[in-house]
Image 1: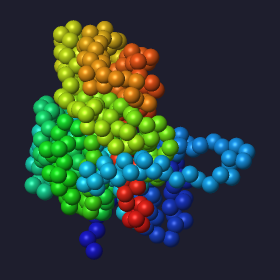
Image 2: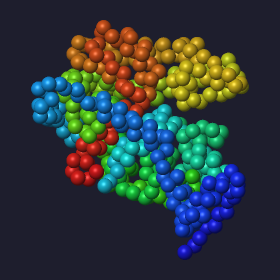
Image 3: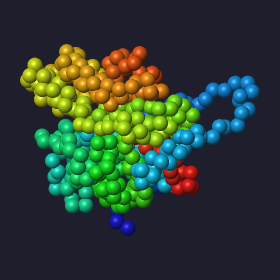
Image 4: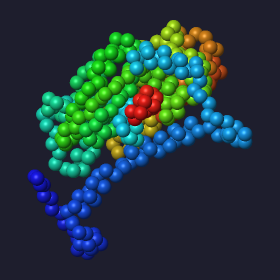
Amino acid sequence: MATVRYSFTLDAIKDADLVRWLELQPGISSTIRDALRAYAERPCHADLDAKLNEVLDALRNVQVVTGDKAATPEQGEPARAVAGLDAMLKKFGG
Amino acid sequence: MTTLTAFDGGYSAIKALATNGRRAYFPSEIGSPVKQATFSIAEARRAMMTVTLGDGQAWPVGLTALKQSAYTTGRRDAEWVLSEPYHALFCAALSELHRSTTHTSVVSGLPLEHYGSLADRFRDSLLGDHRFKRNGGNWQTVTVDNAVVISQPYGSLLDMAMDNTGRILANSFSTGTVAIADLGGNTLNLLVTDALEEIGQWTQGDGLGLLKALDAIARDIHAAHTGITPKAREVSGWLAQGTFPYQGQEHDIGPFAEAHLEPLVQMVLNRFSEAWPEPGRYAAVLLTGGGALALGKSLEARMNGVFANVTIAKFAPFANVRGYLKLARKLWVSHGNG
């Protein structure tokens, strides 16, 4: 397996917590690889923003119902709108 | 599980969403291609966006193109959706949404004016393998297995008429007669639907758009502040924030904007009068597209009392692409494909 080597430095005083933690790990290279991967794949600000938008969109579609209406089964899609969408999808070739 | 993709390549901005929660939003700008993209500083590399296509050309894209290239290509003709720079923009959006080689299904849109002449060829260009490198990294292939191309304003309508799973809601947008005005960078799409089906006689699209006004505002700013030569897409962002930067200070863009936006508002209202001479026929009017950010409030104020239920789409530039994603879920998730 081809390998790529990187070297980096830690400050013995400022980074003492990292040094202690690394030395407790069974494999330092694999630990650093895992840590880098976890950092690289973490959700970025745009991801969290997109997720928040999805939640807000979902909330916008929530219909608040009270009393007996709460027990009403979910209404189906409006039949005319379903037919209208189907007609448009045929036109769009979908 | 296949991640679904919604993509809209407007004349002003590229917008894309995926069912994995990621999104892309950057100016529709392409810089001069170079043979190879190289970066020596990791921080710069993260902030940059270049896309290398199969021929080895690396295209600076979006903000990177605006900042790094002396010459940028922001084409304004309909056929640009079939061009290589447009393909680079599409791949850049895919690289934002999908971080590895994968398969996806795409819903996208075209302006009404060019839908008939371009839809089949545009759909064909979306289908199949898209191989690219992001910022000189590893090659990545995104395979588009299914593609549906609808009209851009219809996407905005679906955003109002569907929930996030693609289920059609019972509201005035889905069941009533609705007028949709989609003001883009270089297009004005006027669509009328009844219960989600287009009514052709009241539907039209043409080349009136915001970019011409932005060009004029940019020229006026340059005339008053000769130390900068703004690009139309920069002006678009400045309009949203109300100021522009010059010599380290923020200046009010209002005096430059009003002179050019007010005539555009009047022209748009005139088009409404021509296309929709009987405003009493509509249960609701939806103002959408990037132009709705700049003009929506002025239009709404003058339409109230003439039209019923005038609504500015929430974060209007993304309205159509949200609708595309909802349609994608309706088309492909319910079939166990999502």
